[in-house]
Length: 491
Image 1 (cartoon, rainbow, N blue to C red):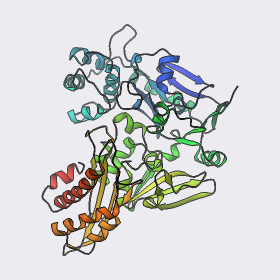
Image 2: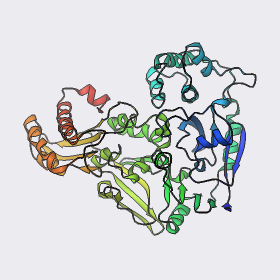
Image 3: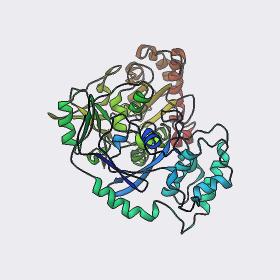
């Protein structure tokens, strides 16, 4: 028997949806295909890689309606309260006239087998909504999370360029014409009341406030907290794990703030990669370049920095640069809040310094003096939309005589947790910043890391690459490839 306090309420295309009987791990993809028979949304990889399941989800961000592409295969339906879900079926007019984005895909032969096409259309539609004149780089970035193995990307890119260049001023669009009314409807769906749906052992909880979240975790300290589900989603779709109860926090506005001061950036744990990008890229351009390589746009729209930190994966992309930048993490519980250095948060594989009932509330990234040098490098089999074999972040300060006065070096993929290279740092500090110092300090990597071999890379490859990355950092900071350091900073 299902017990509930409130219901999950959202808008699907034009229709109001109210769900009072819902499993906590029910995915949006299954709901669309099995319950609503909206089969244009395809199931491909079931892990957020291929983009065949792409839909748009509109939500209110500081009162403004924002639409983002997401992977329906790993998006849990319970996370959709007070949102507007838009599927490919909603784009064409009632008389069958295709939306300009769809028509361009036809005109420029952007589809062959067609399986991936709805996902591409939805990604391009999201770009069409957000940008009047996207550059080719913008188009390619929007398509990072969509895979096609038969058409090739050039016809699809040409379709996107054409629809942007010929953008009509007056055209049927299912969102533009109702944006104001959708905003009002979503405002009415927002609630500060906690939603609970329980059936047997399953329990779905959506806290209405951060205080309520702390109370819930005090009562359910083993609950699974879900922000973006870009990792937890795979626990369900690939590992078939039972996770109970599930607490969805993506609707908590208080966790989705970014505060910029002279001291640095305070980033709420619920801030997505996409939301954080502009602030981080402005303060640390090479960190921004790294964010652009985390998954595809769909993953960056769903995934959060706080979730990446809290998950504690040894191959998480953001902890190495955050540790190198001397970031701190604030944890909160019903008993209060405490702050600790991010590097101290990671104890061992699968274990973080998080007490029962605590959750990550925010991250603080201090402002870095302009005189210091900083870079981050991600090594992966594919440049885009791939997990790291290793990720290294380097930061040094030099005095007037070119002597290293401080060094912070951190790596992911080299140990059971994101970890600083303390022995390498010690081998650098107090010495001249030159090739001799670098060559001698490289040997200290053996004392800092004993990486494993897996399907991403061998231990020997990881050790050699870590050494080479430090040499690359030296060469770039010595002025030999200044343009590469300034505009890329990522391998």
